[in-house]
Image 1: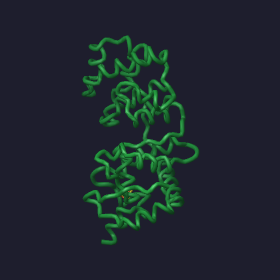
Image 2: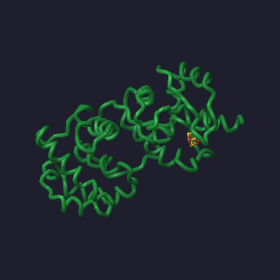
Image 3: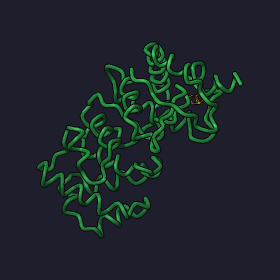
Image 4: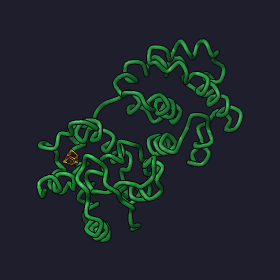
Length: 244
Ligand code: SF4
């Protein structure tokens, strides 16, 4: 288990360096506890989205590109229309920029039209119209970063792949009391390793979706629902507040 570099992230209380490192060194049971509580919560609270009803890797890739820096409820209201208009990489590659911009305008994503068009064309020319399975190939596509590649591999092919974005980082930071020294924590390989170490052997899809939903509904950026949180008993942010 790698030691995660930490620094305080205000306004959370400053974690004790020695305590955090010692906790991480014996974190196996704690990781299991985190997974169990999270998956238990997810069983009763999973959100439903149209992109969770499909196993089509292209439809999932399309949804993940749309979901970047966009509210899930906004995408939900428009996703089926966009997915029906561009059901395959070939359809995306053949679409005019005007058609794409018009389709994305109600989401405020018209600027993403050119990127999507390029992505469709790359899928057709380099991968014969299929979505590649490897993270490296996915990350080589226009508009696809590490998170979108990981989400597409996990949800599109069932691969056991860790995911990490600002929402995952926030939950880890609060619950485990760790936060990256990197300017963009979601690019910190140490945190990616932590995310990987938390994956269950089976059902990585459910686990990753559970974390997405938990971060959106319970451990929200502002006003997290700590009093009702199923993870509060072992949460470092709560312990630190109580101990102050
Ligand atoms: S107790 Fe609060 S800060 Fe801790 S994981 Fe739950 S919602 Fe997040």
